Image 1 (cartoon, rainbow, N blue to C red):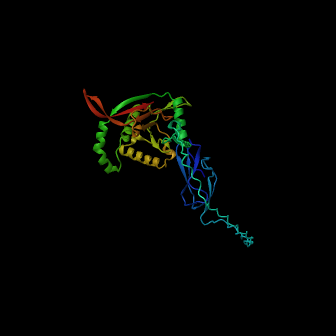
Image 2 (image 1 turned 90 degrees about the vertical axis):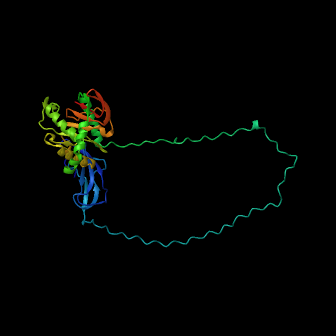
Image 3 (image 1 turned 180 degrees about the vertical axis):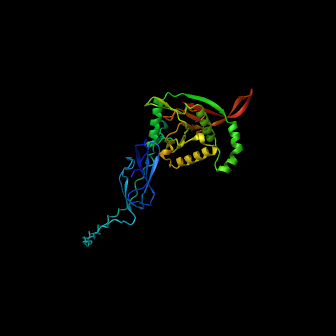
Length: 348
């Protein structure tokens, strides 16, 4: 049966990994149910052979819907009594048609054809009377027919598009840009990355610094960490900080949540980011991994972007967009120096 969904998810689309007649082992994945937020794998409850698929590929299901029937190994179906084939009748002799005589051989001519007399000299036409032969058009390379193909949007991408459009229609969003001199962070990372890797078996990246800095800023400005309750027309202030980190996957954009960031150190943050990123790449994120979140950070710099206006992830109140680091000339103490700079964008 379809596993129970989270409260915010009502249905999903089925994508079959197995077919009728396939042999499966216990806990082997039979199908995948794609919901608005993630994909849920459905394993086989026991070893056996799949006898029927109760939902078509791409069909919609709710929690608890029967999906397939399984014949456990050892419970072989009753064999039908073999039907004996009737004996083949002896073929009847067919009359042989008389041989057709071969056609008569063509007669060989005994006289030579007449030769034209020398007085009958051929008359040549003037060059102007000869019509030139038109050259055939040569086909240009690559001038063949063009084609296109279509792919159905999966449920996650449809939901992402719907949520972003809803945010655009309901939120009065403003984006503020600023730039950050990344010299100190790069120096800190270069100084401690080897010891950090040796001690924690984790790479020290830039995202953990932005997550930790955002947690400090949200504690200083709790209204940015708050949310509006439309039903009661109240502002709900949270005394905890759960930061969603946007991760791009082949299926779409997912935002797993790092919870209680205010209590974490750099190692805790890097470990959580690594675990959530690995689950996202393997399509193993649970709905609980993405529920909630009080603030979001997206990193468009991985795609080389210099600027961008991130869209709020409702019902959150703000989102921070990181971008690529480029060396640029900046004024430092009355002098022009080349520094590693990053533009950041805060939408709220």
